[in-house]
Length: 114
Image (cartoon, rainbow, N blue to C red):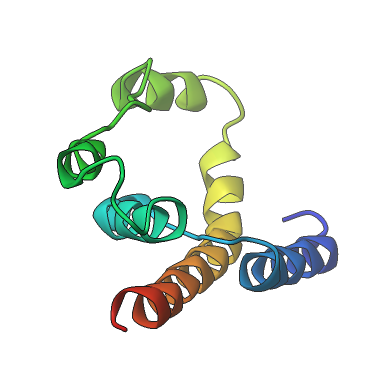
């Protein structure tokens, strides 16, 4: 990134926020765990019924509007160093993602394995 210090600082703030500001943290790859945590927080007595929550685990509403091929074509025809710039920022994204995953696992362990 052009301003690596600012990006690193923003990354640390994002990680701190994940640890301290959210009642729940989930990641797409473990969506069913997030739904279980949500159920535990919002519907501990199961008033909505187990079927409702099982159905929620099957929801995937954020589908891509454009294909990956279309997006990659647009990228290649734009800034020739765009992919390089993007790849240089992935280390920060991965750091935030692994923190989100860790927080989600801690929440699941504390709330679901009682």
